[in-house]
Every structure is written in C-alpha cells, then in structure tokens.
Length: 250
Image (tube, rainbow, N blue to C red):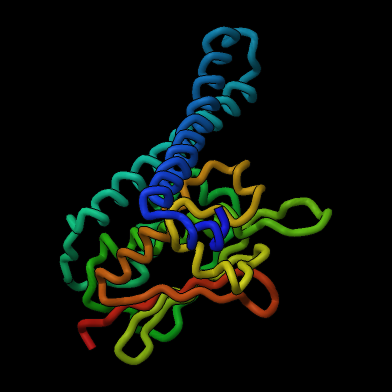
C-alpha cells in the first residue's frame, strides 16, 4: 500500500491492512528461528552418534543463536504492548553511561560475537540521573540493529561483518551515546520510517527475521526519559544513531 493508496482508504481499511502486515511479520519472525531450532535438535537426536564433535557444536550453536533471537522477538512484542498501553513508568536514579552500555552488550547474546565493537569515552564524566534499566534497553536495541545490519554492503562484494563504533559522554545538560555502523546507511527519505512498527527497508531484510520493533521501542523509551534519538548517515558510509538522555543531575 503506497502513501497515495492510504490517503484514499478508510480508517477501517488502513487498520485491517496494518493488522495483516503485523501478523505476516510476526509469523515470519517466529517461524524462522523455530524451524532452525527444531531442525538442529532433530538432527542431533537422530544422528548424534554419527556426527563429529565439530558438527555437534555447530548444531548446538545454531539452536542457541536462534533461541536468543526468538527470545528477542517475544520480548519486543511484549514490551511494545506495555508501551502502547502506557504501562511503563521510569524510575530515575544515579546511573553511568559506561555501565548501561556494558549491560546492553551483555544481553545481546551470541549476536555480539558476529562483529567488532569499539567503545570510546568522550571526556571523564559519564554519570547522570536517569532510569538505567530502560536506558540500557534503549541502547541495546540500537546496538542489536547495528550488529544485525551494520555490515551489509551493496554491490557484488561479499557481506562484511559488522564494525560498530560507540562513543559516549556528557554535553551540556544532556548525556549521549552515539552508535555508528559501517553498513549501507539509510536513505534520508526513509529515515523516519525506521522508527515505525514492523518496517523493513530492503527485500534482503526478509532473509533476516526481524519484527522491526527495536527502534520503535527505543524511541518510546527515550521519550519516557525526556530524551530523544536522532539518526543520520556518516559521510564515509554507515548510519549513526545518537541517543540523548536528559541529565537530571545537571
């Protein structure tokens, strides 16, 4: 459905269209990792004695990776329901950006081993007053997006592993976490759309199960924390997401 189509449809037709899109997206995202988990475990069960140790480890690794992915999908769906029901309230307390970043990385599971990440502090101070659990969740969702899509390259060259650069610090009355990937970047006319639910920008995204909720939830969280999330492309390639936290300590 194009923007022109939407402008001529009734509210009920648009809602029905979005409902179908949601069901299609969610069913794809749930079935893809489940198929891998079931397939890996079936092979292990039927052929265990005939498999080499290396093959066993590979099957277990595949099942574990997809289990983490499935957990990520379900958590996002449940979180989205909570935010839309206005059921989340931040708890402001002392926090450190460095700890929030480390916490967010710890929750990425096997995904964080699929690429490289560098973390740089800008200045000496990184303490602020915010909700550290929600803050680390917002950071983690952007990192998840970067690890998943930040290594993609256009043209005929093979896909490269993600290389993620993180900078953080304080600036005036705000704290920031800046996350840059080295992927294709996001066309300016589509940058607003990446924060919409169930958005996939490329056909190749369909090959990677993704509910398209992560950046939407991150934006919800930043608004709850009186902050914001900004997106632009780096001149040398890749996307840059900057999460700005209102520093209630300032």
